[in-house]
Amino acid sequence: MNIPANLGFTAEDIAKAVQRRDVIVVIDVLRCCSTIITALANTACEVIPTMTVKEACDLHQKNPELILAGERGGIKPKGFDLGNSPLDFSSQRVNGKSIVLTTTSGSKAIISSRNAEHVFIGALLNAKAVAEASLNVATQEKTGISLISAGTDGYFALEDFIGAGAIAQGFPARNVECSDTVLGALLAFQKARRSITKVLQSGCHARRLRSLGFEEDVRFCCRLNTSQTVPLFKDETIKPLANLSKG
Image (tube, rainbow, N blue to C red; front, top):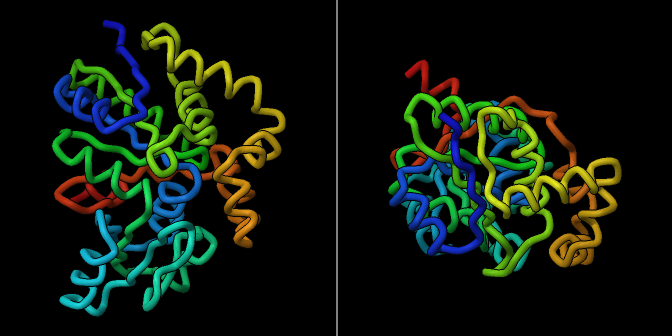
């Protein structure tokens, strides 16, 4: 059986993926998913995404031991412990800690996928690892894979499109039947791969982040296959796949 792979850009695409019982991979390269991967790789206990700043603050008020993190418009909200820079989520800062995270686009896309049985978090950092994990589950469950681009404020994001292509690169052609959108993303990634940082820096969201002083974040998030961490969103929280299989 060939596994169908699709690429979605909207909440409607997420709803269709859930209805198909697809394995979902949410992609937000700049920066939410890259931050989650980094935090968990640096031994954070879990990341709890929220839709709104208020929800995050309310959760933190009830559980003050949580690290309160996130952004709106790229900037850390007032009173938050951390923003959305993956560079801030060092092992010294997050080891053994639980993090509540709210972002403009990424956390919303993750939560919108909550009714799916399997929701993975993907980016360039873990492209190969998340491709293998999602394909393994889809093969076992005899279902498809939906790559979901979080986008930027509801709009197409170049970095997520190329990130989807990087993940698709990890799918064996003999096992996966890619839609035209996935093939387009794959071709874009293959074209951009040798100068991926330069290509992604030309995108609208990367330009805005650089203007806000986050150029090093952009460079960090453009690193390809540097992490084996595969976050899984289940029961309202995100934990590393290995931890969940042990639990």
